[in-house]
Image (cartoon, rainbow, N blue to C red; front, side, top):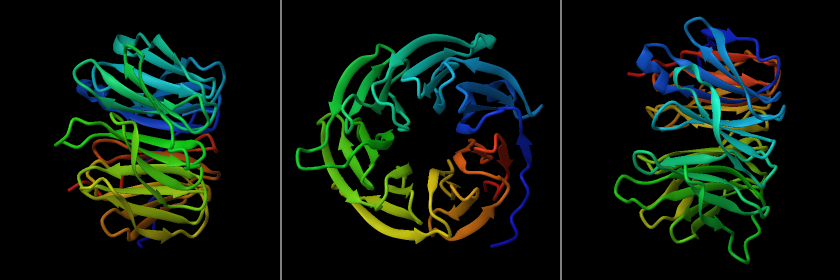
Length: 322
């Protein structure tokens, strides 16, 4: 590994721990890139990466931690999920920055939602459900309940900890990958409401996962000292491909870059670690933050952002996209 670089720049001003990050691609049409951050204090900040300042602050979660941010595929709309059991839909067009809809949640955990575009103006939403081990699937923006995914009678996976909806190019059937409290990862067929496959990846709760649908390969992190890499075969069976030992325990978040060349992890040890995605070779340890790193996010152009309990957001330009 080469000596790690310094951040390209640092965003300060949240005055609170940063728990969620999301690059807003839609803003690039105006020629400038924006980053959204969610904080422990319940605020969402919209940052200009040109001026490196917050250009707007959204206050919609009653002072409760914001754990997930996601812009919608169509239009200038944002979903924010808070520990106040509310999912807020914001209209960001022309600086309106107003809540236009809300979904009440039934689970108080840290499990972030996931969305899947289903046509021009519709999307599917997965969120933790009412029962502690349940996942709720909604059709949006109508908020119609599609189904509730409950584990098999003999399975005791505990609470869902992280969710990722996806579908293959060859099939319109939505699938859901869920990481659970018992350290397992399960693949759900949403239409059939059944688990196609479940594997034991970790001995501790799965804190974050990401999936590369082109390579049918995923990665997950937990409270323990290892990343798990797993794959999905054509029979919809998950298989653990290997584990990668870490220096210190505890991964809060893991993200594969959109070009599927590298991945980044957010560590409890204050470090962001960067790996080559195909080989899992360690490439860099980014030692900038002075407290737990809660979240990482990649922009479409490869820029990396990391958010920490130290109230700072670091921005990195690593291994330029070829």
